[in-house]
Image (tube, rainbow, N blue to C red; front, side, top):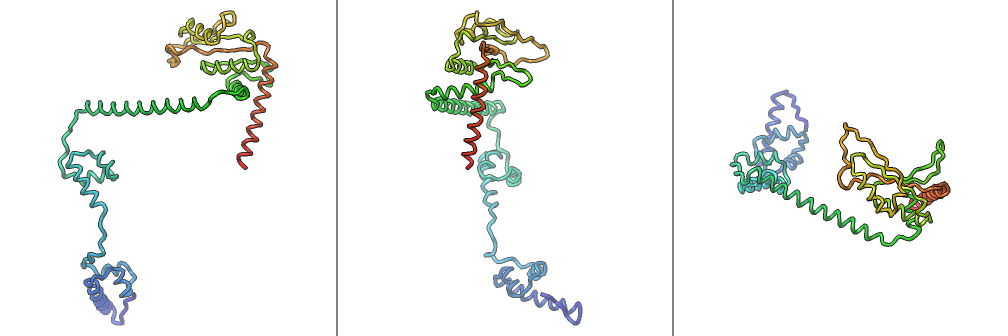
Length: 295
Protein backbone atom coordinates (compact mmCIF):
# COMPACT_ATOMS: atom_id res chain seq x y z
CA UNK A 1 0.00 0.00 0.00
CA UNK A 2 1.47 3.37 -1.01
CA UNK A 3 1.44 6.16 1.57
CA UNK A 4 1.85 9.59 -0.04
CA UNK A 5 0.63 12.99 1.14
CA UNK A 6 0.62 16.44 -0.35
CA UNK A 7 2.01 17.95 2.85
CA UNK A 8 5.17 15.83 2.69
CA UNK A 9 6.73 14.02 5.68
CA UNK A 10 4.22 15.02 8.34
CA UNK A 11 1.39 13.77 6.19
CA UNK A 12 3.07 10.40 5.69
CA UNK A 13 3.63 10.09 9.45
CA UNK A 14 -0.03 10.81 10.19
CA UNK A 15 -1.09 8.24 7.60
CA UNK A 16 1.27 5.66 9.10
CA UNK A 17 -0.04 6.28 12.61
CA UNK A 18 -3.62 5.94 11.46
CA UNK A 19 -2.78 2.70 9.72
CA UNK A 20 -0.88 1.47 12.76
CA UNK A 21 -3.87 2.20 14.99
CA UNK A 22 -6.07 0.04 12.80
CA UNK A 23 -3.44 -2.71 12.66
CA UNK A 24 -3.02 -2.75 16.46
CA UNK A 25 -6.77 -2.89 16.93
CA UNK A 26 -6.99 -5.88 14.61
CA UNK A 27 -4.07 -7.53 16.37
CA UNK A 28 -5.75 -7.14 19.75
CA UNK A 29 -8.89 -8.68 18.30
CA UNK A 30 -6.85 -11.81 17.71
CA UNK A 31 -6.08 -11.43 14.02
CA UNK A 32 -3.03 -13.05 12.44
CA UNK A 33 -0.51 -11.14 10.32
CA UNK A 34 -2.01 -12.66 7.20
CA UNK A 35 -5.50 -11.50 8.19
CA UNK A 36 -4.25 -7.99 8.98
CA UNK A 37 -2.40 -7.89 5.67
CA UNK A 38 -5.51 -8.82 3.72
CA UNK A 39 -7.73 -6.43 5.72
CA UNK A 40 -5.47 -3.39 5.33
CA UNK A 41 -4.05 -4.30 1.91
CA UNK A 42 -0.49 -3.95 3.23
CA UNK A 43 1.65 -6.41 1.30
CA UNK A 44 5.07 -5.13 2.36
CA UNK A 45 6.27 -7.44 5.15
CA UNK A 46 8.64 -4.88 6.68
CA UNK A 47 5.87 -2.29 6.89
CA UNK A 48 3.41 -4.86 8.23
CA UNK A 49 5.78 -5.82 11.03
CA UNK A 50 6.31 -2.14 11.88
CA UNK A 51 2.57 -1.62 12.16
CA UNK A 52 2.12 -4.34 14.80
CA UNK A 53 5.49 -3.90 16.52
CA UNK A 54 5.20 -4.50 20.25
CA UNK A 55 1.93 -6.35 19.99
CA UNK A 56 2.23 -10.07 20.89
CA UNK A 57 0.71 -12.55 18.45
CA UNK A 58 -2.51 -14.26 19.55
CA UNK A 59 -2.08 -17.63 21.24
CA UNK A 60 -3.84 -19.53 18.50
CA UNK A 61 -1.13 -18.60 15.99
CA UNK A 62 1.72 -20.03 18.09
CA UNK A 63 3.02 -23.40 16.96
CA UNK A 64 4.50 -25.85 19.46
CA UNK A 65 8.26 -26.25 19.19
CA UNK A 66 9.12 -29.92 18.64
CA UNK A 67 12.58 -29.34 20.07
CA UNK A 68 11.09 -28.37 23.43
CA UNK A 69 9.91 -31.95 23.92
CA UNK A 70 13.28 -33.33 22.82
CA UNK A 71 15.07 -30.97 25.20
CA UNK A 72 12.97 -32.05 28.16
CA UNK A 73 13.41 -35.73 27.31
CA UNK A 74 17.18 -35.28 26.89
CA UNK A 75 17.42 -33.61 30.30
CA UNK A 76 15.36 -36.38 31.86
CA UNK A 77 17.64 -39.07 30.41
CA UNK A 78 20.77 -37.18 31.42
CA UNK A 79 19.56 -37.03 35.00
CA UNK A 80 19.18 -40.82 34.82
CA UNK A 81 22.88 -41.07 34.03
CA UNK A 82 22.67 -41.60 30.28
CA UNK A 83 25.67 -40.72 28.09
CA UNK A 84 25.48 -38.43 25.07
CA UNK A 85 25.78 -41.46 22.77
CA UNK A 86 22.81 -43.21 24.36
CA UNK A 87 20.69 -40.07 24.31
CA UNK A 88 21.58 -39.45 20.66
CA UNK A 89 20.66 -43.02 19.71
CA UNK A 90 17.35 -42.81 21.59
CA UNK A 91 16.21 -39.38 20.45
CA UNK A 92 17.91 -39.01 17.07
CA UNK A 93 19.26 -35.53 17.78
CA UNK A 94 22.81 -34.22 17.49
CA UNK A 95 25.36 -34.35 20.29
CA UNK A 96 25.87 -30.60 20.00
CA UNK A 97 22.19 -30.00 20.76
CA UNK A 98 22.27 -32.44 23.67
CA UNK A 99 25.34 -30.74 25.10
CA UNK A 100 23.61 -27.36 24.91
CA UNK A 101 20.43 -28.64 26.56
CA UNK A 102 22.06 -30.46 29.50
CA UNK A 103 25.21 -28.43 30.13
CA UNK A 104 23.86 -27.12 33.45
CA UNK A 105 23.19 -30.64 34.75
CA UNK A 106 25.77 -32.59 36.79
CA UNK A 107 27.92 -35.01 34.82
CA UNK A 108 26.96 -38.64 35.50
CA UNK A 109 29.43 -40.57 37.61
CA UNK A 110 31.55 -43.10 35.74
CA UNK A 111 30.16 -46.49 36.60
CA UNK A 112 32.95 -48.54 35.04
CA UNK A 113 36.70 -48.26 34.80
CA UNK A 114 38.18 -47.78 31.31
CA UNK A 115 39.45 -51.36 31.48
CA UNK A 116 35.98 -52.68 32.32
CA UNK A 117 34.41 -50.66 29.51
CA UNK A 118 37.05 -51.95 27.06
CA UNK A 119 36.41 -55.53 28.17
CA UNK A 120 32.67 -55.12 27.65
CA UNK A 121 33.33 -53.62 24.21
CA UNK A 122 35.57 -56.56 23.26
CA UNK A 123 32.98 -59.04 24.46
CA UNK A 124 30.30 -57.36 22.39
CA UNK A 125 32.56 -57.31 19.33
CA UNK A 126 33.48 -60.97 19.79
CA UNK A 127 29.78 -61.84 19.93
CA UNK A 128 29.19 -59.93 16.69
CA UNK A 129 32.06 -61.80 15.05
CA UNK A 130 30.66 -65.10 16.29
CA UNK A 131 27.26 -64.30 14.80
CA UNK A 132 28.81 -63.16 11.51
CA UNK A 133 30.92 -66.29 11.32
CA UNK A 134 27.85 -68.46 11.88
CA UNK A 135 25.97 -66.59 9.13
CA UNK A 136 28.97 -66.94 6.82
CA UNK A 137 29.24 -70.68 7.36
CA UNK A 138 25.48 -71.16 6.96
CA UNK A 139 25.43 -69.27 3.65
CA UNK A 140 28.33 -71.32 2.32
CA UNK A 141 26.75 -74.60 3.42
CA UNK A 142 23.41 -73.73 1.82
CA UNK A 143 25.17 -72.83 -1.44
CA UNK A 144 27.15 -76.07 -1.29
CA UNK A 145 24.04 -78.20 -0.78
CA UNK A 146 22.24 -76.43 -3.63
CA UNK A 147 24.72 -77.80 -6.22
CA UNK A 148 23.77 -81.44 -5.95
CA UNK A 149 25.08 -83.99 -8.45
CA UNK A 150 27.00 -82.75 -11.52
CA UNK A 151 26.09 -84.10 -14.92
CA UNK A 152 28.84 -84.96 -17.38
CA UNK A 153 28.01 -81.87 -19.44
CA UNK A 154 28.11 -79.62 -16.37
CA UNK A 155 31.50 -81.01 -15.33
CA UNK A 156 32.78 -80.56 -18.86
CA UNK A 157 31.76 -76.88 -18.98
CA UNK A 158 33.17 -76.22 -15.50
CA UNK A 159 36.47 -77.83 -16.49
CA UNK A 160 36.80 -75.79 -19.69
CA UNK A 161 36.25 -72.56 -17.78
CA UNK A 162 38.60 -73.70 -15.02
CA UNK A 163 41.37 -74.50 -17.46
CA UNK A 164 40.97 -71.28 -19.43
CA UNK A 165 41.25 -69.30 -16.19
CA UNK A 166 44.22 -71.14 -14.68
CA UNK A 167 45.86 -73.13 -17.45
CA UNK A 168 48.58 -72.34 -20.00
CA UNK A 169 47.34 -70.87 -23.29
CA UNK A 170 48.75 -70.85 -26.78
CA UNK A 171 50.04 -67.54 -28.16
CA UNK A 172 50.43 -66.51 -31.80
CA UNK A 173 54.07 -65.66 -31.11
CA UNK A 174 54.71 -68.89 -29.15
CA UNK A 175 52.93 -71.95 -30.55
CA UNK A 176 53.11 -74.48 -27.74
CA UNK A 177 49.63 -76.02 -27.54
CA UNK A 178 50.47 -77.75 -24.29
CA UNK A 179 47.99 -78.58 -21.54
CA UNK A 180 49.52 -77.31 -18.29
CA UNK A 181 47.54 -76.38 -15.17
CA UNK A 182 48.89 -74.69 -12.02
CA UNK A 183 47.09 -74.09 -8.76
CA UNK A 184 47.51 -74.13 -4.98
CA UNK A 185 43.89 -74.96 -4.11
CA UNK A 186 43.43 -78.71 -3.48
CA UNK A 187 39.77 -78.45 -4.49
CA UNK A 188 40.71 -76.93 -7.85
CA UNK A 189 43.21 -79.74 -8.42
CA UNK A 190 40.58 -82.41 -7.64
CA UNK A 191 38.01 -80.86 -9.98
CA UNK A 192 40.63 -80.54 -12.73
CA UNK A 193 41.66 -84.20 -12.41
CA UNK A 194 38.01 -85.31 -12.46
CA UNK A 195 37.58 -83.28 -15.64
CA UNK A 196 40.61 -84.94 -17.25
CA UNK A 197 39.15 -88.33 -16.34
CA UNK A 198 35.90 -87.30 -18.04
CA UNK A 199 37.86 -86.41 -21.18
CA UNK A 200 39.51 -89.83 -21.16
CA UNK A 201 43.03 -88.62 -20.33
CA UNK A 202 44.95 -91.53 -18.81
CA UNK A 203 46.70 -90.83 -15.52
CA UNK A 204 49.92 -92.27 -17.03
CA UNK A 205 50.05 -89.19 -19.29
CA UNK A 206 50.21 -86.81 -16.33
CA UNK A 207 53.38 -85.30 -14.91
CA UNK A 208 53.41 -83.32 -11.68
CA UNK A 209 55.76 -80.66 -10.35
CA UNK A 210 55.64 -79.07 -6.91
CA UNK A 211 56.54 -75.36 -6.81
CA UNK A 212 57.25 -74.08 -3.31
CA UNK A 213 59.27 -71.58 -1.30
CA UNK A 214 62.62 -72.99 -0.21
CA UNK A 215 62.01 -72.11 3.46
CA UNK A 216 58.76 -74.10 3.62
CA UNK A 217 58.30 -77.78 4.51
CA UNK A 218 59.29 -79.10 1.09
CA UNK A 219 59.11 -82.81 1.89
CA UNK A 220 55.77 -82.41 3.65
CA UNK A 221 54.36 -80.58 0.62
CA UNK A 222 55.65 -83.25 -1.79
CA UNK A 223 53.95 -85.98 0.24
CA UNK A 224 50.72 -83.99 0.52
CA UNK A 225 50.37 -83.49 -3.24
CA UNK A 226 51.43 -87.07 -3.98
CA UNK A 227 48.71 -88.38 -1.67
CA UNK A 228 46.09 -86.00 -3.09
CA UNK A 229 46.60 -86.99 -6.73
CA UNK A 230 47.32 -90.64 -5.86
CA UNK A 231 50.51 -90.73 -7.89
CA UNK A 232 53.95 -92.15 -7.06
CA UNK A 233 57.26 -90.33 -7.14
CA UNK A 234 57.89 -91.55 -10.68
CA UNK A 235 55.13 -89.23 -11.90
CA UNK A 236 56.71 -86.21 -10.18
CA UNK A 237 59.43 -84.02 -11.65
CA UNK A 238 62.06 -82.39 -9.49
CA UNK A 239 60.50 -79.86 -7.13
CA UNK A 240 60.97 -76.22 -8.13
CA UNK A 241 62.16 -74.09 -5.22
CA UNK A 242 61.54 -70.37 -4.98
CA UNK A 243 64.53 -68.55 -3.53
CA UNK A 244 64.05 -66.52 -0.37
CA UNK A 245 64.39 -62.74 -0.52
CA UNK A 246 65.40 -61.54 2.96
CA UNK A 247 63.88 -58.12 2.24
CA UNK A 248 60.36 -59.50 1.90
CA UNK A 249 57.99 -60.79 4.58
CA UNK A 250 56.22 -63.96 3.51
CA UNK A 251 52.51 -64.21 4.18
CA UNK A 252 52.11 -67.68 2.62
CA UNK A 253 53.56 -69.52 5.56
CA UNK A 254 52.33 -71.93 8.21
CA UNK A 255 51.29 -75.55 8.15
CA UNK A 256 48.66 -74.98 5.47
CA UNK A 257 51.18 -73.66 2.95
CA UNK A 258 52.11 -76.39 0.46
CA UNK A 259 53.07 -74.32 -2.57
CA UNK A 260 51.52 -74.96 -5.99
CA UNK A 261 51.10 -78.09 -8.05
CA UNK A 262 51.79 -78.06 -11.79
CA UNK A 263 49.97 -80.72 -13.83
CA UNK A 264 51.15 -81.29 -17.41
CA UNK A 265 49.45 -83.61 -19.89
CA UNK A 266 51.91 -85.40 -22.16
CA UNK A 267 51.12 -85.34 -25.88
CA UNK A 268 48.38 -82.82 -25.21
CA UNK A 269 48.33 -80.71 -28.41
CA UNK A 270 45.06 -82.19 -29.68
CA UNK A 271 43.49 -81.89 -26.23
CA UNK A 272 44.56 -78.25 -26.06
CA UNK A 273 42.85 -77.50 -29.38
CA UNK A 274 39.65 -79.11 -28.14
CA UNK A 275 39.80 -77.07 -24.93
CA UNK A 276 40.31 -73.78 -26.80
CA UNK A 277 37.54 -74.57 -29.25
CA UNK A 278 35.16 -75.50 -26.43
CA UNK A 279 35.98 -72.27 -24.61
CA UNK A 280 35.12 -70.09 -27.59
CA UNK A 281 31.95 -72.13 -28.02
CA UNK A 282 31.01 -71.15 -24.46
CA UNK A 283 31.76 -67.51 -25.29
CA UNK A 284 29.48 -67.61 -28.33
CA UNK A 285 26.69 -69.28 -26.38
CA UNK A 286 27.01 -66.70 -23.58
CA UNK A 287 26.69 -63.86 -26.09
CA UNK A 288 23.54 -65.36 -27.55
CA UNK A 289 22.07 -65.92 -24.09
CA UNK A 290 22.89 -62.33 -23.14
CA UNK A 291 21.19 -60.96 -26.23
CA UNK A 292 18.16 -63.13 -25.54
CA UNK A 293 17.96 -61.88 -21.95
CA UNK A 294 18.06 -58.26 -23.09
CA UNK A 295 15.12 -58.60 -25.48
